[in-house]
Length: 196
Image 1 (tube, one colour):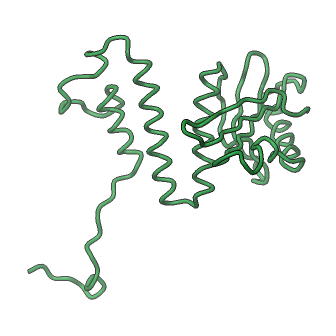
Image 2 (tube, helix red, strand yellow):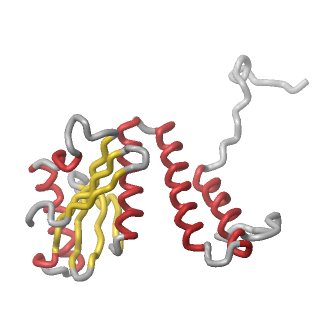
């Protein structure tokens, strides 16, 4: 019989939990190909069976991985924070599909008191994007939640980031993306949501 020390008596043995990112990397590896892991155990790649399906599969895998991350976050974070981060993930994917070049997510000032959810380039404009998520829009529209205080914070982040990147202020724009978690989630982009 195995000996137990005093602090282990009465407790169930601890499970060894693999880091969630490792599980995600392995899941992606199994489906779309080698991402730094060995595929010696995998007899084929799905993209070999379905040529031309790589972009679609990559998009579907991305959606699946976003959802798996959301499930893991809900176990560790409070529900509102997890829902907000899921909304940011969906908005990030949506903005990329609309042609935005994402350069930063959750960018904070050094003081830590102001944050931009997404910073992206669209053409010649440097766009600072606030993402607002709601479980439903029956009480209020998500875009109405961007109050004057939040706008002030976004402007401060924009000034600092534009200064660091030597971007003229005339090329800075503020957008809002709303995410309403219906089935399927509804996303809407409001360009030039407020002035700089």
